[in-house]
Image (tube, rainbow, N blue to C red; front, side, top):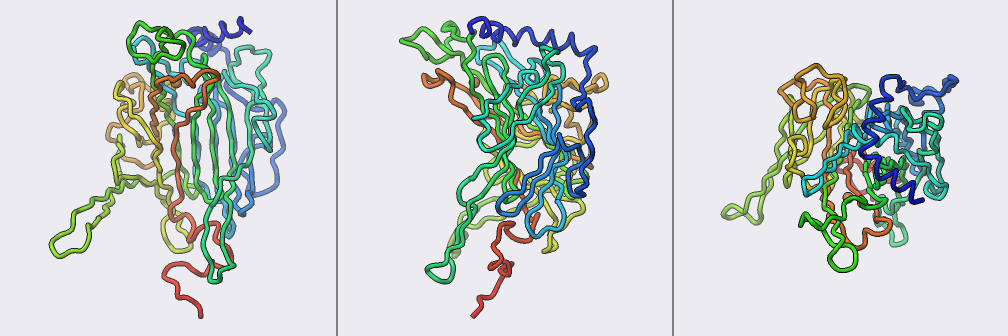
Length: 439
Ligand SMILES: [Cu+2]
């Protein structure tokens, strides 16, 4: 046990070398040696059965996608579509969704990690115990550039469902009639060990069309960082000796939208301003304005600001353009690096732009190694969304042992994808817009 831990603690330093050494002769393909027959179902996502995730939830919503495993990004979800009840066909949402980087700078300036591109996040995929995928299925993942090339297969991908509590509740017209439903979600997750940390990368596909992506950090605080000398840590053992060095986890997600099957999505920013009551007015007023984001943008949250990604082609049955709204999570924006200085980056798609920092994509010389450099005025005809969510981790006594999971992430929520609530019960389906009570 002890030996394992020591070798694990070393991995941060060692992995960069071993991955580089392997990369020369390594294949990045994750496909099985034996080709799988394509399923006949026309609506299924375009991949072989072994790489398909398809889940119909109790509310009648079906999510479909293909998964693969990248040698640096880890789990990649492609061709993600949403089909609520009442929609004849799946509605494509994303071409591709995955992590874009996990950047971990320590407060004392001693170290800074890029876990995806520099420290073997993908190779750290962990076998899941049956109990940590309750009610679900654990799929076997062939890990590219595996540390032990003789054992590349890891039972590491969980797909399962979970209830999330009320999806809605409404009192009907008699005291005994209550419309209520308990929401159901499809969950897809992996656990990746990096050094002493274990990251749970969770994708949650709700029956109401919302997608929530979260990274949870657990495992153990870094064994090397109990150094009281820097004056920045927090004492976590008896008295004031073992100071855990504070640090940040800056997680990036990369989302490539393909709404209604087209990559030519449009970005819009909305801002509202609230004004105190004018003389003679009863109450304050709020005015909301839309700004079309036609060129690459490094965006920052502020109160009353949000963005949406709008379909170029698709409309719902009310004739409104389909879109997905970006719903921020709690974040601590890290000002220490140019690429962590903004909350979201909208960049024009470029195949070589793969990771938000220390990019390993094969961009031409002078292209810049991080996402901030790629915001340089290009017109957005195929936007890629890079979300940066930061968490400043000041350890506490409770972080031992194991460390409780601390989560960070955000959601994308459908806005006008369907004409009504996708979970509307049949008895209420006529109440769209300004409806008249029936007598
Ligand atoms: Cu931490």
